[in-house]
Length: 465
Image (cartoon, rainbow, N blue to C red; front, side):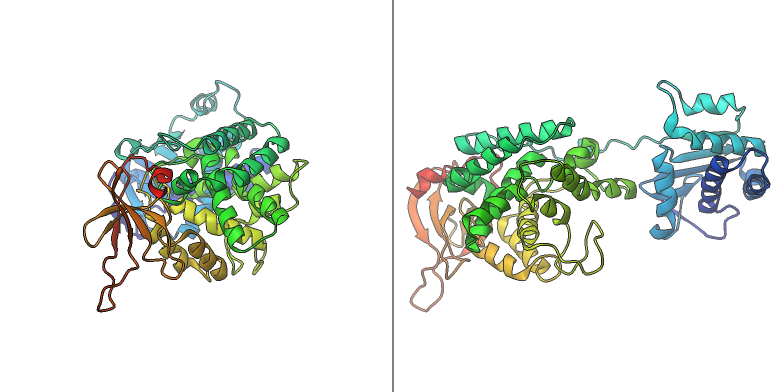
């Protein structure tokens, strides 16, 4: 199919024809066959297609990634105009309409009756068979299968690989079990969640190895459970920086751990789709905060604000975002904390369509979002807590040394202390404080770039000892 834009002066407006079909579908559900309103719509549909059929012998309308194509040519419409029709057809699993020369009004009626009953098709029944039973031979309704372009995408691991802190590995295993049970339609195990929260606070968050893995670039495309564990730890770090009291910290970590539980109700082929989501797919994804809140509200034994955070974590500090909770409604402060951690974790993790952002770039993106999407005070506190270059970040200095950040300088976060390593990430020259200045007042060295790990593992405990 070409991507040449059609002119609006063409002899058939495909969007208008699709609107007529949807209108006919709804009318057949309301009125008996032969009703004057239905007859009028059928007459209008025939008047629309006949001039085009005389010159082209067929009408082929396809919806591809929310764009409408007429006989292989993309038609220029505002997305706001096409969205309702695209969604209505997607709802019944149809995105392609073919009309052949010789079509009769009764065939339009039969096709729209098939659309009306599309959701209720019995197992094994096909829309082609239903069309044939209604003697519809000049109209076909189809479902286009998108081309699989995922082979061109880089495939990342789904979770950390190589040696892991035992508590971190245990936390991921527990979280995976909890999320799998929810995906299977079972109730959340509140006791397992409480135990997991204590494991995260008491052991994982205290492990240098686990923290370096969570804070630095993550060369894996983590599934929802893994992302949620990471967001819980990042939220804990921010909560500690804010000096939250112990009960509030526990509530925060639980809410962060379960903030994305609604994604267990979204099809994996949408969650893991390597390319751009269609309008209808995006709508499904944007329902996950509401689904998550509903699941959590039905789970006894959880903290009072856990469902609130799940509902609000995609809301902004100026009262926009999704779901729509009313103009200007600002999310709870715990929701705002989780939002900061959520954005940072997503940026520093790999995706099928992009490599992970290095920590310093992720921090710059947080800074640009401050005051619009994210709470400015919380962004500043988060960056201060993790350091502009977090512990465990592999860097190269202006003098060519390869090093791993082992400590940050609170008064100079751009110039941390690094442990020099070789290409195998083994100790190779002691520590360097990049905040040290020379006799002229300038820095002796500075960080010039962060370096991808490319699957290599950093033993931060060994380097920092």
